Length: 115
Image (tube, rainbow, N blue to C red; front, side):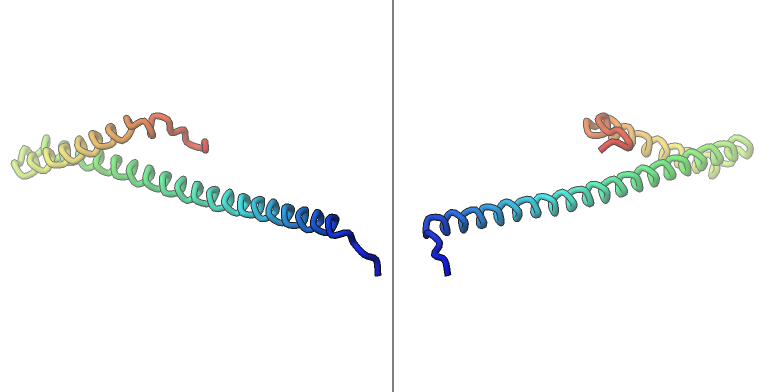
């Protein structure tokens, strides 16, 4: 058997430990990137879902307000007039809240499809 100089052995061990540490850091970094990427995709789906629901709510409120006003204009029934006012108030409130959200710095910076 050949004898390996202790200094050489220590250098080899140090190099192996350094390599394993570097590999560990690399693998951990890749795992964190995958987790971040998945979190970003989940956040994007949540944002898209919220936008879709908000748009559907706005469309429904607009339809309801328009229909209620048309009925009130035809019948002049106080119940229909009151319903039209309630529907318009609900639409106005939705649009007011949406304008506040659309005016936030995050929403101003938001560009659909861009990460």
